[in-house]
Image (tube, rainbow, N blue to C red; front, side):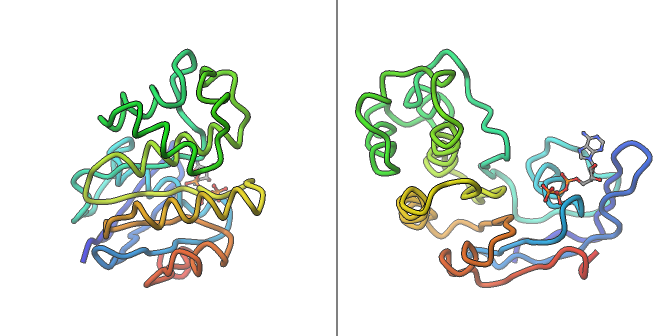
Amino acid sequence: MASVHNLIVKRGEAEILKNFSAEFPEHQVTAVSGRSGCGKTTLLSVLLNLLPADSGEIHGFQKPSAVFQEDRLLPYLTAAKNISVAAGCTETAAEKALLQVGFDPEDLKKNAVQLSGGMARRVSIVRAMLTSGDAVLLDEPFKGLDDLTREKVMQFVKENLKNRTTILVTHDPRDAKDLAAAKIIEMETEK
Ligand SMILES: Nc1ncnc2c1ncn2[C@@H]1O[C@H](COP(=O)(O)OP(=O)(O)OP(=O)(O)O)[C@@H](O)[C@H]1O
């Protein structure tokens, strides 16, 4: 089991995670939901080492890759270059993956700054899925995608999870079901 134990995380004066403990089945998907502001993104930021915990223990997230709510792309590189630089794969592999998630061949020529929000979101999903590591942290990855695109992206994510321990933050029960989540954590009750 990957786990966090008695995590305390403050942001400014506010204690966001108050002795939060949870277990995440290894090689499976755990869905995390909870009201807006309860600390889901904060939890992922701590697991990614982007935010320090004030105390607590973390096990099983040595090398996670992530989809953030904001897409964090390098604006003047193409989608495929953004992916290959971060994931260490070839641009050809990145382009193949982008076509799978619904990019048009024409879109492959554009720099990230020229992409729509939904396209940028798909680039960040492909980047996370093609990056190797022991865990995948997905912060509302399917939010705002139309149904057809969501289906393509869902298929791509399923094919590329590769048994990695996965945390899926989502408000949509369909996401947990479609990714066959082994466990669902409702954050308020576990804080
Ligand atoms: N950079 C920051 N500095 C100070 N407080 C912050 C910062 N980012 C978030 N917070 C606060 O931390 C709390 C938890 O935010 P977080 O983004 O983790 O919630 P969330 O559960 O992911 O919410 P949502 O579902 O809306 O994305 C909120 O009260 C928020 O205002």
